[in-house]
Image (tube, rainbow, N blue to C red):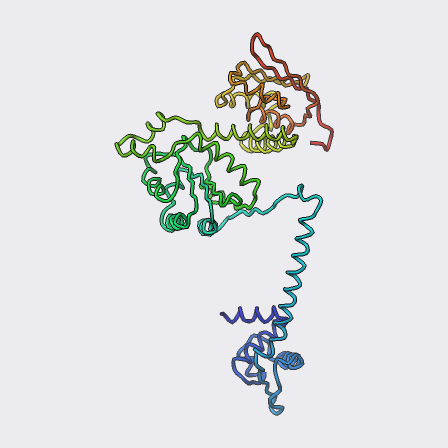
Length: 421
């Protein structure tokens, strides 16, 4: 232990900085005058006797000689015992108070509305922190890996996963399969269940431990986010449940790889839904479930989240609402499976969705559960964008043309009152 650490420990027991410095020096030399002590500590010589007299009253030192004046230190074990006991009593009172407060918290009438804020941004030593996070996993570990990170899980991390597997931890890894990471995934296959997804959706990897805590690693910026939250972990795991159905087991692909087939061609032949499609299904399912449970605020949370992302990625500051809606519709038409037309009348503040094809009857099913818009991420983005640009929805009309088998959703808006946005 360093000298500085000893002095900090002494001050935590109630000594001043000068007293801790003088006592530490006097313990070391055994007996000394002010001159002797000034050579062994940083306290000014003219203040040392004043400090010693205070310490004498506390029973830490004793006057050994009056001419010349010299002091000796008394045994630390005996002199500090009382201060240590007082500190222990203080900590015990804090622990008892914490337990009482926790019981009050658990009984709180507003408990269901309280938000879990156990979330930390990791800016330094990300690999070390990730290693510590993985080490704490006891039962199940679920991972979505970027292509880059699938190739870097080697060395200490691989050995750690191997140890977790030996400790009967269930490890599930989802990643893309390319020629560059075939060997890496093959190695990870020895310690985990590998599932191959068609393509990456994000630039970050996600880890969920024991279905309650997570670690999100941004492989571009190098930063990470660590959270402990059952609800957030549950959403990710529900997403993984969908993903497991829409992905391929690595051991099914392994024989084809061993015969020299190109991974890209294998993926094309075994084509499954992408990460995006699986994410869409999860969000749609969560919205339907929330409506069945009369939790209409969940839609709003999703709209706010994806419209915030859109505003960060696309500059709409100089666009009108109708131009913004057209831009979203153009992007969505390239990705969405629904054939949908979107129009916004700037003069009447009316938004119109037209869907010409509902073969799997997903729209009729959603409408029957109380959802008043086309259940699609791009529809949510349009609704959220209009709200962010200052309009408030006041009415909705839903029309189904049986002859054309066409759905039309007409939404009327009005400007939001000042301060209500």
